[in-house]
Picture 1 (cartoon, one colour):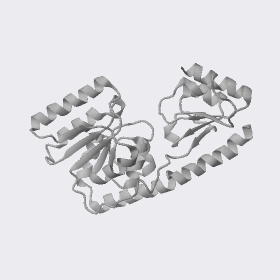
Picture 2 (spheres, helix red, strand yellow):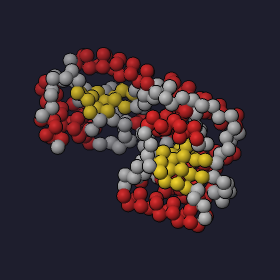
Picture 3 (tube, helix red, strand yellow):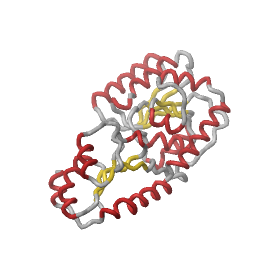
Picture 4 (cartoon, one colour):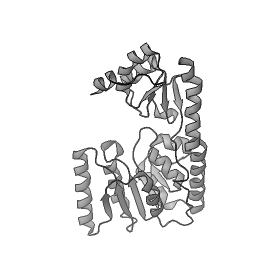
Length: 276
């Protein structure tokens, strides 16, 4: 399918971009022949051999943050995540009950959803009134089945449905979810996940092992989910509020949609224009 799409594509564009490294590399011979600049959008920790090829022969690579692309090269440009600040508006939390927790994202092994659930099972022995609502699409059937079984068994054992599994929600309805919960939990250790930046923009506390998020948002807690989850219950409200305000300022400074568009525009003007 990819070869067919490439062979039948209209190659009269000023710039050709792709978020699939294989397609981007297969397109390079034609693009170099026509003199068309090539862009690869890449935000993964994995070092694909196709990424090496594109870095050598392509025009430029766009990613969100330095740690979201495993290659160091003059061709790599960081543009942030492009968050609509008006849609993901900040809501100050004066007093959190610290009971209702949200997971939002794909349900596959890389997201460590089962590990998150098991952490909550352990800490519920200390904080019995907590609940965990999981929203997301099952990407891996076997992993999804394990999640469902674990949730069912846990709820039956406690005789209370304190963990729920729900369908994914449209992006424009995500902010309402953030405002309903006391904290969001997240277990992906790869590149900077956009949902983390959206959550930070809305002012919801975030418990995550994502090193890229912690680095860019100045979090100094541990890299152990269990430890960070326990710490959330004991952190003082004034310190938490200060961190949430700081998170929002970081989003405004580095990840707003306006600055994202401006960065891309400047990259195209300064880099692609030289090739054209």
